[in-house]
Length: 208
Image 1 (cartoon, rainbow, N blue to C red):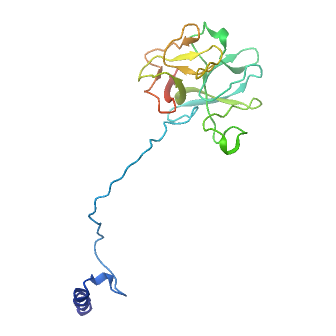
Image 2 (image 1 turned 30 degrees about the horizontal axis):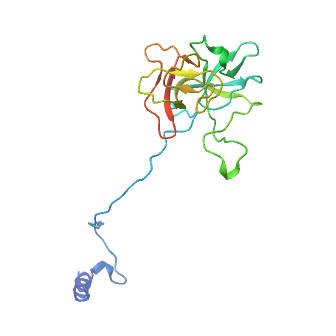
Image 3 (image 1 turned 60 degrees about the vertical axis):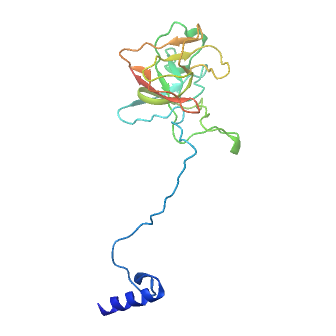
């Protein structure tokens, strides 16, 4: 008690606090400064990378042989089965009659393009043609999309040759004549889950 009183008396003379004196041990509640601080976050985090399975329960992914003649060319793209060799392939112009796909190519971790160095862009890796490719059979996955999809919106797949932002096997928010196919969906089993981020990536619900 005497020591505490003495420290307080000395502190009052020095214009400081008792616990700030040399050798003092502060026992009590911590205090915060009542100073207004302005915080600004200038950037928004991306929704995700193409091919990311972003909801891990429940989901179903299986490995598949990547077709050597029409290999899968990107992650987050629609793929179909090649029955002749039990593989999966990229979409192509002759798929205009299709209304269903086998699944969506999944990006494993870690993987990125093998060239380009520090100038390499994120999210543009290509599945190795001499290795199996993972395919989402059911779940939620991040995919690149052309257009402005809405939650519950219909899902289209581009099947024509690549043209600008349109890529074979890529997902579209609107029909484009014979360049796209509409994926059949029962009670919203295949649909977009909202608008894309600034990089054109959105969440696809794929439950077949």
